[in-house]
Length: 82
Image (tube, rainbow, N blue to C red; front, top):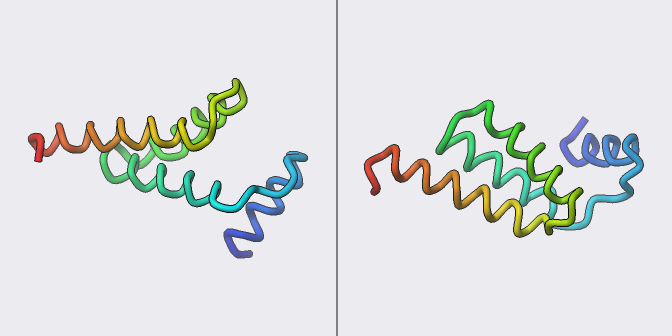
């Protein structure tokens, strides 16, 4: 099964309909930044937190941007601010 097939099947199982274009990439980009700059297990937890925020009315773009920027700041600080 490909990623796209899995996402379509998972969305259908949860009765979410089709995932709008680009949303999958926002989540993947967030997961990459968190895994790289913070800690790998933080990636799926961050995706879950974004889902909670979106469920409460935040836009996906704003929520992923906020956590991506937080992860990047954390990574820069851990590397000594480079």
